[in-house]
Image (cartoon, rainbow over all chains, first blue to last red; front, side, top):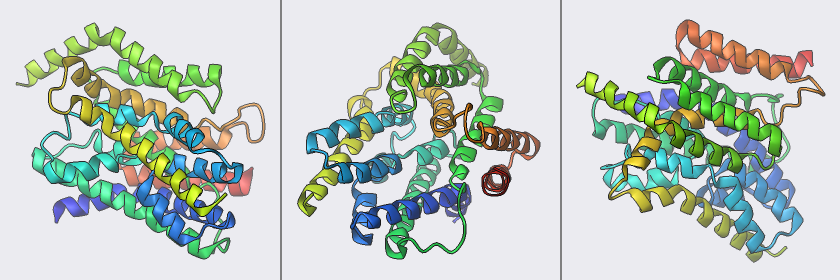
Amino acid sequence: MKDVHRAFADTLPVMAGYVVLGIGFGILLSAKGYGAGWAFAMGVIIYSGALQYVVIDMISGGASLMAAALTGLMVSARHLFYGISMVDRYKGAGMKKPYMVYALTDETYSLVCSAEAPSPRRYHRYCFLVSLFDQAYWVGGSVIGGLLGPVIPFDTEGIDFALTALFVSICVDQWLGAKSRLPALTGFAAAAVCLLIFGREDFLIPAMLAITGGLTLLRPVLDKDDKDGRAAHD
Amino acid sequence: MTDLHVFLMILVCGAVTLLLRALPFLAFGRRTPGYILYLGRVLPYATMGMLVVYCLRNVSPLEGAHGVPEAVSCALVVLLHLWRRSALLSIVGGTACYMFLVQVVF
């Protein structure tokens, strides 16, 4: 019960962002002539907010399946980083693991990648619940959007900032808790520089390459810190 | 565009996303090389920085509101978080501030 309560409390910010973005998605999709059933199917089959918004554009543009696959690769490439981060943490999660891997979105990743728990079993339970709750918010929101169409009770402009705020608050936690601030600085600087050079549509993949390169160069420094830290801890 | 084509497009995008999410687990799940373990330890910090930039990618400092709502709201999130370390307070405070700025002020 404790884990359910904690997972629910921790996912409240995601609920705010996902329900609103999901409703927005459902409304846009229904405006193209694809109702709540389609929104539900996409939330289950794709389950990636950013890519689902792009699919709406591809439906209007009449993209080929090959173009859809390539666009999907570009837009979702960042998920490789989430998997690499979670390979070790999700070890031993058993039956829950396939679902946890499938449901590893930006927001779920942001919560599970730095969560702590008394035991691996409790940690995996927590991560599973976070994954499940987050998907429920997203699919629920997009179905509501598909049913409601363009009728919204109040002005929600700007509420999707909840997701940015979630990421910023996690950055602050990590900044205060990290043994070294070099990884955070590498990620931030590489992404910012690549955004300036490559523009908002194309910067993510160059940024991922730059981050991987930077962290690889820093390994002699950071891996030593890490080992010393763990040795001191033992 | 036929319904079938749209459905196939959804399947293709779903398969690509699932593949990207599962690939590291399939490749390194059994025996994880030391290099991947190292990346797994440091990537969460680097990735969160990248995600913040990704969220703010549509901000244009030279036009519109010049990114002032985003800058002020992000600063508020940081200050609230340093003050109380409560994720909910930081996020609700920052989001309310942002909504006020984009709906009322700018």
